[in-house]
View 1 (cartoon, rainbow, N blue to C red):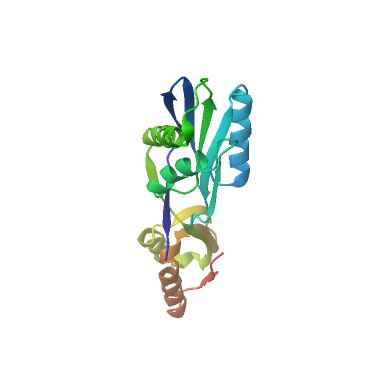
View 2: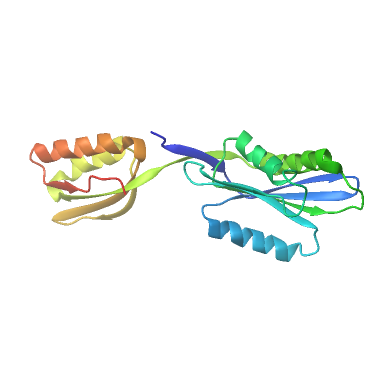
Length: 205
């Protein structure tokens, strides 16, 4: 079961110059189409006098949402080379935009491919890739007397606690790494079967 993916840690930039043309690259960690559109709109406003705004992104935990845009450059000369650099690092939830200022001399398709590839590579080189675990939420309701047993499971399964209430009936809301979810459910069921008052949601959300 896929329980993690790689993305970039923070925004970064890169620069490549060729025959008077300037290629400014921006790499962003993103998590939605909305955030991608916001980044693109911001760059178009900030660099309103540029000739092209070419970009590529991979989105989603499984990396299934993919797009490459040449923005007026010859087909597959800009977006695909940018996309290739994202793929080469096995990244998802990553957007790379390359803004071109035309220098008056045409570079040809091969020159463009190299320019967009290199500028994207430069941007991605200046940030780190990070491993992100895919989690699913779980809610556990238990009697106060079972707190020690539940807290042991929190530690054993490295749960990320979202909210917690201590009372006669305690409530724990947490995130569990998706690959650990089935075994956690078995451990919670075992507690319930051995006399602990433990109630939990047992399906992936």
